[in-house]
Length: 440
Ligand code: DLL
Image (tube, rainbow, N blue to C red; front, side, top):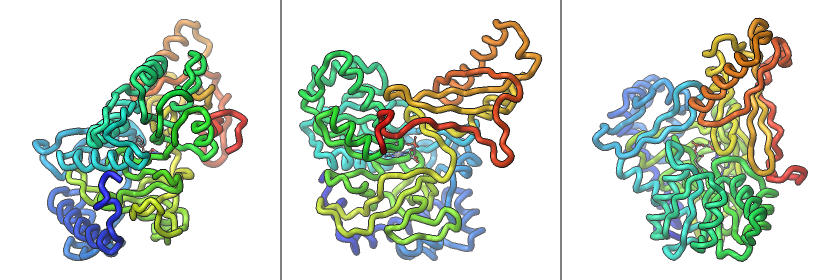
């Protein structure tokens, strides 16, 4: 354990600490963020009503759309002079969701990412290859700070350039790998093509997350790479990677509860559900200063295990592997995409009809995304050059706005199937096994 005092804290003491931190959080949000003040007032709850952690149910939920309304900095509780980092993740349309971190926020997040690495047995001796993207996405920098906090050597590869990843993995004797599970499989496949036997490498654990995966995929990764494959969870609004992580028991992800308080609610009614029942995961960021987070609805579906303490000694409750989402967010090559974002881009381009179908598939271990777009009759009968120009324009705009390259196929008017009810915008042909034909 990286920090036994905090990670193995006796439950009554932990609940007390959470209560104290919740009180301070609500007071901070109320005093510094007009959005929260108005919301608490409308909900009829004052900071003094919060005495302990059980009072959390008195507080209103926060949803992603509210971040959008407060774009860019309306959710910030600290002046810019105290903000030392800004990250952002996909919003449902146009503008992203923005999060700011104070120095203390970065410290706490690095601590939790270090705890995550230690969950896999990593120590200061290790070399940690970080193949999550560096940038506005929290994966790369989050794990980077975690590795440094642990005292390990961070190898800041970012995602891509797979041959080089493999070369350095071999030459440096990398022991810990952090990337999306699909990229771990991609690394294994490319290594095989290069004739590199990864089984001979000193790898010991991998922290894989940022996208859904399955137990079958874990087994497959562990067959190809000589490491324990662990699930790591997080989201930008709450911090980034390291909100929860599996330990070597591989039975649920311990939430670092002294910083992030989890609840499971019925997504329809908002009522809290008991441990052991699946519902929507809600987080309160107990120590957050930059962007205080009160009962944030993640839209992720899971449950909190009700099967008693974990043999590893950590007392943070465990959430099960995520089973899905309550909204239509897709994760393609680790990038979050809402169909509404694609629509937003399409309607801004002349001659393009808001009739489209997003087809997501997996070739080998890489996700592919194709957008079939209907165009007007006049355009369709136009010369090829013009059509190519339009296709390139759509592709460019999608890349700029969504940060992903997609294949664009222009189709004739009225060829995309119309539905009587809710339009079907997405066809997801991926089997989440990492290998086509392997059952999940
Ligand atoms: O994906 C942070 C992260 C980076 C987590 C690296 C783990 C590793 P966002 O881009 O804000 O943050 O996306 C958050 O990704 O709400 C889930 O739907 C999904 N997600 C994250 N981890 C997992 C996981 C990062 N282990 C969204 N399993 C979340 C399934 C995951 N889905």
